[in-house]
Amino acid sequence: MPQLRLALNQIDSTVGDLDGNTESILHWTRHSAEQGAHLVAFPEMVLTGYPVEDLALRSSFVEASRAALHSLAERLNAEGLGEVPVVVGYLDRSERARRYGQPAGSPQNAGAVLHRGAVVLTFAKHHLPNYGVFDEFRYFVPGDTLPMVRVHGVDVALAICEDLWQDGGRVPASCSAGAGLLLSINASPYEREKDDTRLDLVRKRAQEAGCTTAYLAMIGGQDELVFDGDSIVVDRDGEVIARAPQFAEGCVLLDLDLPAADPGSVPEGVVDDGLRIDHVTVSADPLPRYEPELAGGEAERLGDDEEIYTALVVGLRAYAAKNGFRSVLIGLSGGIDSSLVAAIACDAVGAQNVYGVAMPSRYSSEHSIDDAAELARRTGLNFRTVPIAPMFDAYMGSLGLTGLAEENLQSRLRGTMLMAISNQEGHIVLAPGNKSELACGYSTLYGDSVGAYGPIKDVYKTSVFRLSKWRNRAAEERGQTPPIPENSITKPPSAELRPGQVDTDSLPDYDVLDRILELYVDRDQGRTEIVAAGYDDALVTRILRMVDTAEYKRRQYPPGTKISAKGFGKDRRLPITNRWREHV
Image: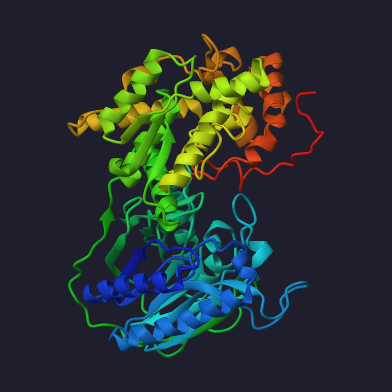
C-alpha cells in the first residue's frame, strides 16, 4: 500500500483579511513542507474567513477571493513550495446558471487544489446547510462534482463540511469512485457536546465511504461564533488514527497507509446523487516505502466545564483582537455575573488590559463594593470606584421618578458612565448579562445591557455558577489565587436597585427556571409539553410570558459568544410583533 504524509492545518482566519489569511496559509504550508508533507490542507473558506455573510453577494469581494487564490498558487511556487499539492477553501462564483434566481456568476463556497503555481482543481460545496446559524442556501449555489486528486498513486476525494453532515452526496460517491482517502475541509462552529457528535459522524462517514477519512476543522472566533479545532482522522473501520487539540492552532501531521489507485486508469463518469467525477493527477507514481514516523495519536480532551470556559475566552479574545481593541471595561457589582465576565476577560486579554468600575448607589451593600475590590485584588485588573449618587440625585430632583423607573434609572446611569469612559479611554464595554436574564427580559435597556460584546450571553445562570466554581478550582490546582471571591458565588444574586432586593423577588429559583428555559428556548417545546414534563402550569405560563414579551430587548443586546445549539440572535429568530402565545 502506498504511503502518504498528510498535513492538516487547523488555523484561524479573519473575514475579509485576504492578505493576512494568505500569509498564514503560506506560513503553515512552509511548516508542513519542512516536515515532509506530501499533501497539505487548510479549512473551509480559510482564504476569505468564515462566514462571509452578505459579502458573498458583492462581486468585488468574490473576484478578490479568486484573484487571491491564483496569487497564492504563484507565491507557493515562487517560494519553492509548488511541488506540494495544497487544498484550500475560498469564495468562488459559478460559471453557469444553476436555478431560478441564481444566474451565472452566483457565489459558491469552494475549495481548490494548488500545485506548481497553478489552480489545478476547483470544486464547490455540494450540500448547503440552511439551519441554525447557517444561511448558505441564501448565498451559494451547490457543487455537482465529486472532486478527486491523485497524489503519489492515491486517489483523494474532497468534500466541504456539510457534505459529511448530510446523508448522500460525496460520501457514498467516494466509495463508488474507489477513493483511498476522503478529505473534508470544515468551518464547523463550536457547541456544547458537539465534539462527541462530530466524532460519531466522522466514524460513520468513513465506514460509508469505505476509506480513511480526515476531518479538518478551523479554530478561532468570528463575531459570535467560536471554532474549536478538534480535527479527526479515522480509518475505514471508524477507528481513530489521530485527533487534534481543541482550541489550539497547529498542524496535524501523520503517515497513512492507503490503498493504491489503479495506475492504468482514472475514475470517471457519474456516481451517487448525479455527481460527476472531476479527477486530476498531480503525481501518479507511489512513493518508495519508508518507515512511518508520524503515527498520529489523540490529544487530551478538555472536561465539559473547561471546554465551555475556553470557548468563552477564545470568543472574547478573537472579537477584541479582530476588531482592533486591546482593552475592555466592565462594571463590577461584586455579583457572580460581572465576576465571571472579569475572569474570562483577564484570561482573554490579560488583567493589565481589563478595567473594572464599581458604581455604587444608595442601595449598594458594603459587601458588593468589597467583593468587587477583592476581585480586582485577586486578578490584578485595573479598578476604580465612581459613585452614581450625585447623578442619581440630580435626575430624581428633576424628574421625581418612583418604582421601576427609579430602579432602572440607576442601571442607565451606570451604562452611561461606562460608555463615557469607553469613549474617553478607548476600551470596549462588556455586557454581563446571562442567558437566563436575557430570556426573561431581566435587564435594563441602555443600562446593564450596554456594551460591545456579551461574553456570557449564551450561558444560563446555573452554568455561570458552575463555571465560576470550575475557574476557581482550576486556579487552586495550579497553585494560583482563585479569581472570584467566594462571597460572590455564595450570596443570593441581586441587582441591588432597592433595599433588600434579590433576583428571586421576580424570578423563580434558577435551577427550575433554567430547566424550563432550556425546554422552551433551546428545544422549542410548548407550554403543554413542558407542563407534561412535570413543571407547575402557572409557573410555566408566567415564564413563557416573560420570554415572549422580552424579544424587543434581546434584539438590542450586543453580540456574544455562542456555546449552545440555539443561542439568541443567529439561531433563535422570532418576530418582535407577535400575537402567538404559548402561555394563553
